[in-house]
Amino acid sequence: MLSNHVKLRELFAKFWEEREHKLAPPISLIPKEDPTTLFTGSGMQPLVPYLLGEPHPQGEKLYNIQPCFRAQDIEEVGDNRHTTFFEMMGNWSLGTYFKKEQISWFFEFLTKLLGLPKERLYVTVFEGTKALPKDKDSAEIWKKLGIPVERIFYYGVDKNWWSRAGAPEDMPPGEPGGPDSEVFYDFGEARKIHEKSQYKKQPCHPNCECGRFLEIGNSVFMQYQKQKDGSFKELPKKNVDFGGGLERTLAALHDSPDVFRTDLYDKIIQASEESSGKKYEDDADGKAIRIVADHLKAAVFLIKDGVRPSNKERGYILRRLLRRVAVKYRKLTEHLDFNGIPIIARSVLSTYDAIHFDAKNDEGLISIVINEEMDRFSKSLERGLKEIESITAIDGKKAFDLYQTYGFPLEITEEIFQEKGQKINHKEFQKEFGRHQELSRTAATGRFKGGLADESEQTIKYHTATHLLHQALFDVLGEVRQEGSNITQERLRFDFYSTKKPTEEEIKKVEKIANGKVNEALPVNFKIIPKEEAFQLGALAFFKEKYGDRVKIYYVGAKDDKIETAYSKEFCGGPHVKNTKDVGKISIYKFEKIGGNLYRLYAR
Image (cartoon, rainbow, N blue to C red; front, top):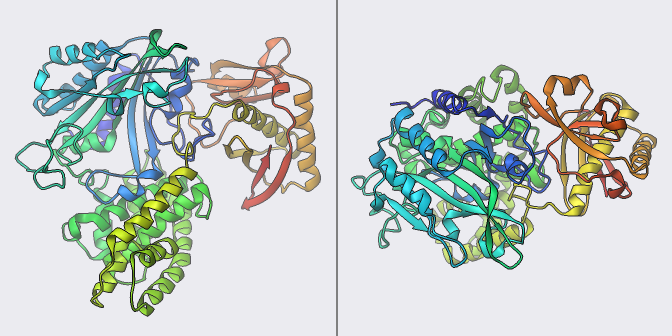
């Protein structure tokens, strides 16, 4: 049976290419085209504009394997199936094939190419609402393929419905959405996974959290559009959006409920064992080693994509990952020597060498970033340990303060106090932890959702403004390179590389040029052209992105609609205003250096 992740990637690509699909190159974990989210959190995230009607440069049938990161899953890591970093295999139909082809093809891929026994497959479909019909079509297709009715489960809008706004009642008029059909792999009754879980008193079913069933694929059928009167009308052009986890598919191929027992983790687990001196099986069911393996893998990918530890936004998430690694690594080794952590990081590079990394060239920078953060945290960790030793009594609130201040998980604090014969009030700790999570959730609303959750008028204006600023920087400084951008409704942030440090006068000149183009009321348009032609025309590109053979170019101020005469030409997926006058006045209110030859400006 197939079990190698490289072979799985090759099979997935070949399968869809044989069915006339083109590769939509995966984007960076730091999304350029989605100003509303810190990270790329799903395979469909970069495809949302095209699912909503934008023409894709590669055509109407697409596939890819997209690296993803979900910061909201950090606290879940440690069990046998949750990870913060994962890869999502995806395929899309933009108005071509629909349910029959998608379900049949995916079933063929799972059973014929991968060799998964169909007896182990369970599927779920949409049960319908008062306003929306039950998805009998999908159920009938599955039955004809050989999935019996007892392995087809119906669920409501919380499990088998997709729209950007969530439930159908929350969708605004004009918003598209549709039912989805998920496929689960059954690890079987013989393992008694359900009976050993905390859910044993409840009936087991595909969406049970016990771990017996593992979701390995989800086909979303964008079928309906909400009307002004609250009803739903079928879309004339229907889309398919499929996503299947690479890690989970491999776990099913291994017939292993533990996603960490695949070749995507073998080298990392082995390096963790050798470095720490602890065996995976002896580490409380592998929890600490799983956290080290997952968090360090995610950290290496984030560092590769340009994130650096800090106390803000993406940098804070990276810092949090690395410090949790340090705490768990100390638990494994029982000392404060973190020299083994960069060795484990090398195993991440080795696992994905020639796929996502050039191991020899990437190792130096990644090791430097990790070593610097470990040196920084070791001092904080020592202070925290000394504080713990000085405490004579501890309550849940104090335990949470230690968690917040020094990054001490509850189990580490508890371990040390057990030696003193003290116990911590778990309910009190969880109360404080829950309050903190709620505050974090409120603060992060919209920031991790992805998929252009915020297409407000103001963010679209700021998105277009970044194009004007990018070209103006090029005009004033010469060769510059975009490193990233972040947009909210309140301001835009633009990061760039320049060998020349801009002066205050030059930044003012950039602002003046950009506002001049706003005042000229220049048209903003796009064309889909061959990639090489776009480069020959001088279109600016985001260096971290991979592009297909055909690309979408947004251009500003072309004469007679000739792209070569445009003021600004840039690789971009949109959305943008139609005319620069709609951007309004651009005011650069902050400018700073953020690294070697790296600069950041803020504007509104």
